[in-house]
Image: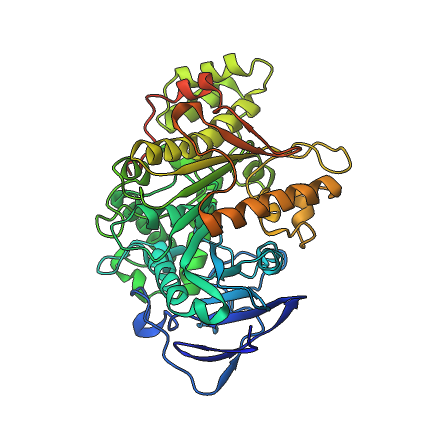
Amino acid sequence: MRREITTTSGRVRGRQAAPGVRAHLGIPYADPPFGPLRFRPPRPRRPWAGVRDCVTFGPVAPQSARLTGLPVWAADEEDILTLNVWAPAGSGGPWPVLTWFHGGAYTFGSSAQPDFDGARLAATGMVVVTVNYRLGFEGFGHLPGTPDNRGLLDQLAALDWVAANIAEFGGDPDRVTAAGQSAGAGSVLALAASDRATPFHRAILHSPPQGFRSPAEAATVADRIATAAGVRPADLGSAPPEALVRAADLVAGDHSAGRWPGRWRHDPVLYGPVVDGELLRADPAPSLAQGAAAGTPLLVTHTTEEYWLFHAVGGLNPVRTEGELARFADDLGLPAALPAGYRRLLPDATVEELWLAIFGDLRYGEYAARLVESQVAAGGAAWLALFDRRRDASGQRVRAWHHADVPFVFGTLDAPGADFLIGAVGTDEHRLARHVGAAVLRFAAHGDPGWTPFHGGTGPVEVWGGEPRSVPATDPARRALWEDVPLGPAPA
């Protein structure tokens, strides 16, 4: 691959990222979404003169998070709609393309996170693109007169940029896989299920969350943000980004103190894609059942202990007594029989363990199963994988919790902060990472990760952890507990 690349907005100069891999970082794909463009759909990037050095990551979107290895948001940096490209430096293309959207509760995160470094995946024979997009109120807040899903529109703009430019980097524009984890997976799911023509051909969803918002729910969040910011809801658009970030932190603090009613008492996520009747006409699961993504092969994965991460970092109001567990179920509109059913399945579990198992299945496990079943019912192709690694290289117990699979996807087991997620690393961990990375490459290249597609309630499910293996579908007794529980957008 050439050191200098011509894009639709101008020439860019990259650097060597690893032997045989070049990286171009911080490439703008749209104009800065501030000033007259704030709260508006993204506008294609205006051309620049000369050659732009693209050797460092672009600025992060407005947020208060301070994560290991992540740049801190600065209010004077507005060029936040950027992406990064890692590609094989030699001949042999065109290569399949993986376009990755980071997670972070639609509120924080960045493509610059060390565990998203694309060099190792690119070295296996693909082009890897990671994307920044608008977050928090800037990207997903409800503001009358503006589109609700601005962050999703940013992602579509990035995918359009990939379609127009990736061939110059050695990528194949006819083999683009959109992928993401958590909020990134929810975003890709929303795009796959939307009525818009989406410029990608396959999708990988790591822990897609059951977290889509009704318009009324989005408006409720906006009202609370306005109160915290000291403005009228109609005036939120004139509040500076830093004021809206501070207001969101205050509202999230009210959640942590248990001052929100009903389901809000337990849900720490303020924002999410809105079923707005335009970009997203319905919750994705029933949309998939109606064939919305039947032509887009899906690889869906989740971990076995998703909610243990949120509990470990103090993001949830804990549930420790039988009374609190009953209230939790009532607050979330779950049938009273559900906790009792989990008690039968897990007779030795503590109340806390039952609560986290139910919450994890509600938001991730059951939702993932419904997605693949809906896709298959409509005649589409889907594969399901389960990350279930419980011991690290030292033999210590680790959690197969939210995000623990991501370092294995990218092969970034030694990234700063990865030890917290996955514990000690040895030969078995590197073998698992190679296996997971190979499945991603096969899916991006051929639309098949290497095991039998899901075919209804019988599975199969690929298990990642220890020795990868294919097993029958998830426990039917557990699935039966959720049979009549709706998982769509909740009312405000």
